[in-house]
View 1 (tube, rainbow, N blue to C red):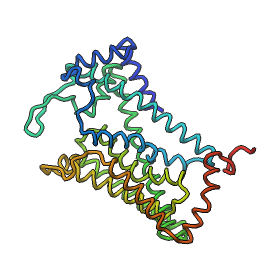
View 2 (view 1 turned 90 degrees about the vertical axis):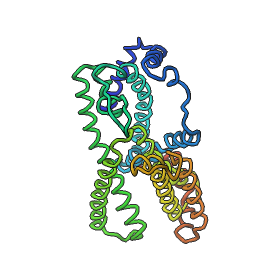
View 3 (view 1 turned 90 degrees about the horizontal axis):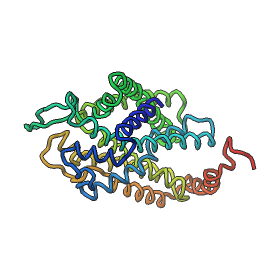
Length: 343
């Protein structure tokens, strides 16, 4: 809520500097930017890359751990619906604010004395924001709120990091210890002590991996890195989540294998693409020309989830398919769910 409040105040102050006119805001941004009116034109990125990013941002939201963890922190189905509704509503609202903050940064920060610096990158002299382009929001906070507001935004950012990391760690540890270890590997026969032990180990491993990745991607544009996270969520989580709600033929085997294929294919394409292969590993040319993998990895996840579900003829699969109708009615109407209103 503090982050939303800070972003809202920043957006309001940007609009105030433009007389609460989007047209004036765009005109001032165009005047300040070196490319002029070109910043308002469609991007020159590869169409496949652009479509892939769009797919990731649309469908990846539903598969984000930030959303999925809402199902594990409520008492019943009714509260789960309400929790996810509020979470997605706040996320959507924040998305609306980002374009105002972005154009506000161009309008009020770009080319301002004390906020720009000249550095040498890869043998070339470039002009950038002090501290790098990822500091745009902090500089904008200084421009619209004086010395006090940047301190508030910085404090909120640092407070948000542990909150987000703890949520991701909870979601990841729960998935590995309960869903993967207890349900898949031990087939429901794991004891509580083993689940807790696996959960602790998973949390530690996730923390180490996150730190290493943070060091490797330190100089990457944070907005682009968010797109990659959405791509993985759209590939690994969304297809399984969608099919589990609307397709009666889904089985546990299909969900596990399809989800893993979506995850592995998305990560592999990211590693072989320009972001990692060139920018991080410093190879001359990427093996895959596209930065965003969702347009390839998400269909793969759907296809293999479907394929392995259809090929699953086990007794467990038949039982799962037989239970779908009751689950579908309960999910769509709430009838029969704990906490649902009685009719």
